[in-house]
Length: 325
Image (cartoon, rainbow, N blue to C red; front, top):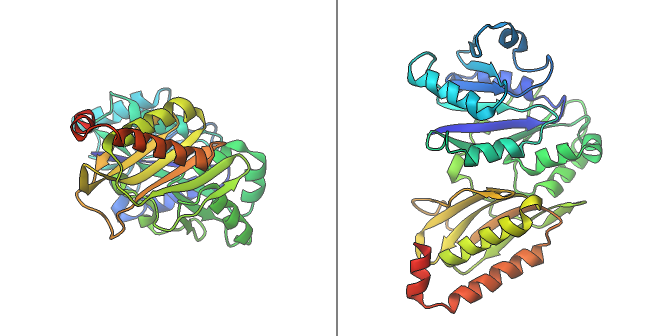
């Protein structure tokens, strides 16, 4: 399975500078880059624009192309070239979005399209935030707020030019679960891009946070959850809250499989099927579900989960197990 990272961030936040630095690292030498960009500001744009082909090789050994049209067609074309040996066998894909882009549709595509299922999997979303203009941008641009809220990891850029304490506080209110790394003049340890795919789980110490309409909170359950409860819970959230469910991710202790926790991941109306870890990653075996929403109260989500679990508990174990299968 080839992992796909989505690199997003508002205009001028340093996405391209950061990516150029990372691509020079040896561990990124077999990376394919897709630029979803408008105007002459993309990664090595002159090379890409001047090429008569849709894919060029960079001096770093990485491949780069500008997305022209449908993302699925671009990805399928890159995979077809890889299969027939026309390009180097890349092991990672990075999609650099436009600074004005909402990353949610790209995430949706990676999670749901049957044409690329089985070959590509979303590794995570990395969002760059400009320390100089970040606060004013977040106050003015809702797209910037959503880019931050959807992130698995935040990268603070230009911190040498401005103080960061107030901005870090705002970022924590928008996305309490995403760790923040600081780039030094565009340079950063390439391991920041190693989010870990399906092994990505919420941090153990989370607290509720909110900023205007965007809220982030953690649902923590000490007792195991029935498999049927989890299915009904995710279906209900997708159906009734999908438009306002910016992100949901978690690790869940399933009653029918106590030694193998389920990792769940969803964006708005779309949820991945649960992925089963071989073992618990730590001694903490509580269910921890991080919810990033717009105007969906934590108490409502907690009440929904409790009500569904109580209803399922009234069903006989035989019926519950049959439904879980």
